Image 1 (cartoon, rainbow, N blue to C red):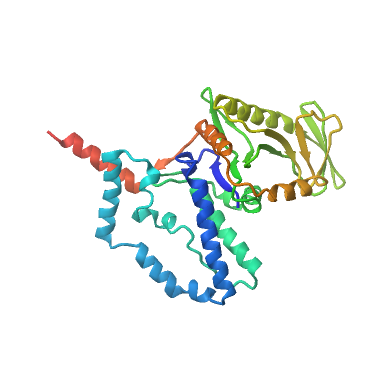
Image 2: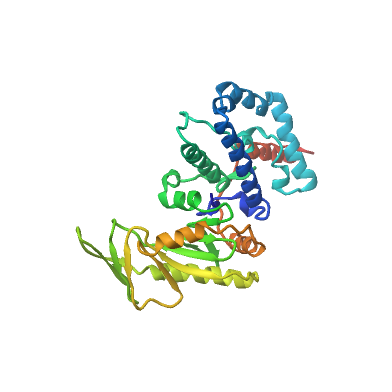
Length: 335
């Protein structure tokens, strides 16, 4: 499962420590899947995730109310006294973070009939977990448009590629105080892919040119003009290239027009563009999935460079906001 390090302008915990969270996610995912798979093969899946076991786990994670308040205050005192990074305090069992701390709390509405079905259920629940990591931190959260939970393209990137792939999905860059939204940036251990989608009905054909508009043709529909996808692809590639140069990132950048269910006819395409359509996409896809290289230093450096210039919109969690308001009130009331 690829990792969602940025989605639109939502706050992401990868922004806080890009060198920590990718390896942590991969480790936790492997540990949980190995445990789950072993239980399934041994016929102990019901016992492992029975209501009784889940109830006990919940009790263990939910401290009494007074203890919760003390633990919550303890975390905030750490921030005030030492100024430690948020990631260092995140391991403490803060009440409002039970879902995040209990990383892979799995619930199965039915008994999986096969190992493949178990794996798919596992990945579906991990997808929601990734959405949380891509839209919240210990102290802050962003309000996610619910359409993203049903977004087929986002699901495609997160569930079909290796853990070592990092995804920026429709990120918004702030360049010279001007927000610029792009499509998909996929950072593999060896290169960066700037991907622009060009998809319509099944078997639609797109006639490419250097003009502002291309033509979409389909045997069941009249011809239609579509905006030249190279305009967005060039803009996205230029942003990535400039930021990589600024931060000294040595990583190849690939510019892609992607049409998984249609065809692209552009004989005179620029040399620096990769066109993936129904004919060429399957081979590329399998080649990408076969990449077994671990996370690389340049990959993480490139991710950090991009995240530095991404716009973020978020708000304090209610618990933190109430504490800050109380602290400010006490300071103003002091003689």
